[in-house]
Image (cartoon, rainbow, N blue to C red; front, top):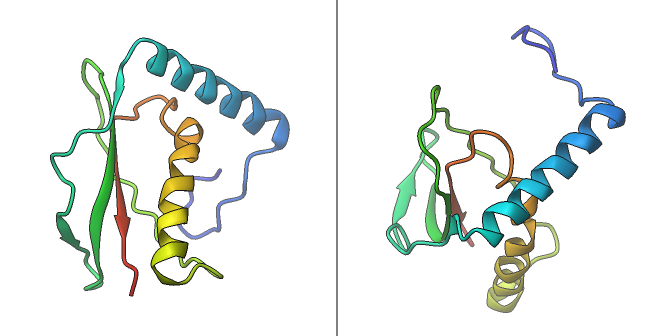
Length: 120
């Protein structure tokens, strides 16, 4: 990826990305095996409002036990679910989304993820 704010970032080559994702999944397995990943209920049901005026309700929180983070950062990802409709569709997506945990929890610096829903 590039640091130049005027250019569009490009994905890493597979030869670089795949080993990093494998390390992430292995670290997630280690965190799980040592009971260092948690799903606290502290923020469940909380409504969060974003700078663009949109809102979301926290339906899951994932945290990792870490000593400290030198340079904390926030990443907000928003997307629309195509083909997911109604209560049942959203409930199935929420259940399935838990399977994505190995794809992010093991990356260096991970502390917490709030899972939000905006079903409207």
